[in-house]
Amino acid sequence: MTMDDERPEETAPETIPQADELGLEIRLDLPLKTLQRILVGGVVALTLAGLGAEIADELKWRDPYDLIEFFGLSYEENLPTWYSSMLLFSCALALTFISLAKRRSGAPYRTHWWLLAGLFALMSLDEIAQKHEEISNFFDYDGVLYFGWVIPAAIFVTLFGLSYLRFLLHLPRRTAVRMASAGAIYVFGALVMELPLGYWTDHQGKHNLTYGMIDLVEESLEIIGLSVFLHTLLEHLADITAHRAS
Image (cartoon, rainbow, N blue to C red; front, side, top):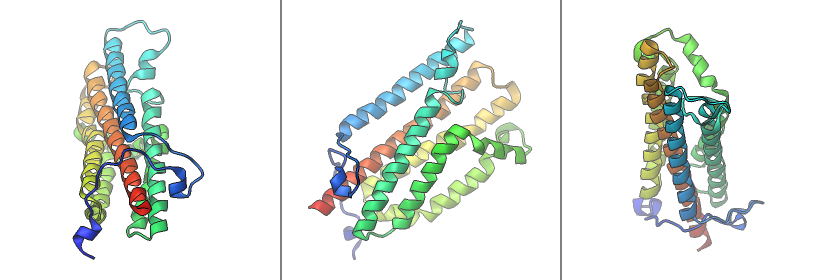
């Protein structure tokens, strides 16, 4: 098989595939452009609401209904946390559907798709439970490594990324570029931005506007990365089902 056979030029499908195309007992009937608008709207709305919450907190705004904690991106167990968890779980579902479609067609790298589905399902749970932050208890560092969980996380991300290089190269170029870009945005937010956040927390604490702004950028990048990744997955799912039906 030639490289051109493995990596056909991919055009953006217009709709998410129907259930009968996947052999599933659910129906997905949503134009991808509409989904894109919803995802962009979610990013903008949550970022603006989070910014307003941080400014209101800094100005000591009277908040009898705890709206600052509910919308603030620097807080946990609130609307942004639930939204991020929902995005992660949606990615896990999309990856599961792709895995099923790949299995039905006998396509290569089926295990890679299943592993990604499992990883995103676990990440969805951890987004709520925040268990990864407990890893920091095993690392007694300060400064940029104040949140010590970034050390094993960086090692894992590096090894995981290297192990998926051939998988990415096998994908159509459009899908590979968008998946890699989404992953880079998410990792930059979740991992790299944790370094200045750790430094600031170590020296100035959490209850100030600068901490809130750094965390705002971090969480916003995570949501952007997940939104791009989800849209890419559903676009790829629509494309492979369309190719099989043709």
